[in-house]
Amino acid sequence: MDNSLQNMPEKLVDYLDGKLEGAEKSELEQQLANDKSLQEQWENLIATREALQQAGLKHKVAVLHNQMMEERKVPVRQISSTRRILRYSIAIAASLVLLVAGYAGYQFYTLSSEKVYAANFQPYELNTLRDGAAAENEIEALYRQKKYKEVVALSYTRPYAIKENFIRGLSYAETADNSGAISCFLKVINDNKAAGSSVFKDESEYYLALSYIRNKDYDFALDILKSISSNPEHLYNKKVNQKLIRQVKMLKWR
Image (cartoon, rainbow, N blue to C red; front, side, top):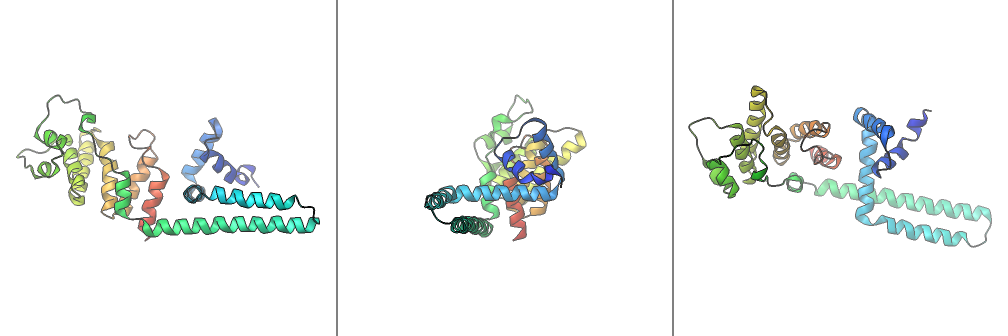
């Protein structure tokens, strides 16, 4: 058997703990990107780690371990000690399985599109707009004042610029109008393609994915999230982690 494959669970734990460096880390990340089976192991490992942290199982395991070690100090026949160790090992393993299963079930049935959206949505600060424009138009002024309904109510006789459509998309999102938000963010992305530019492209993709989640269009959301996650240069790459992708998959399966 290939030693690298044999030791893969160990490597995944080391990677999760931040212990892998250099070529070994790069090699594992490349394998994770290309191997679906390995990706499932990675997601299961993260879920287990979260379960342990949530339930404080480390303390329970430590208690069981201490009990086991105390009993091992008592001089008894070797066969009795071996059975006792086996019994405690099985008890610990069973506790882990039950806890992970219970935690996963709780997460599955209490998860909702609104919860995932709320946990990942952050109001966009207007002063981070990156087009370099000096003058602030009416749409920008209203958005800065958080008058989102007035933003979407504006009706220009001229076509909206990319920045204006982006702000309108954000305003629709703030007023929980998923269809309006999706329409505006798609317009920003398509206008960028036509112009060969990238003005607010990354931002629109991220907020579009969130709008799809709240609108329960999980397949569309997953396509965008996976694309963002696989692109280290994307502005929202670090916000799209495996936990978010896993939650959207769970919503899709329900």
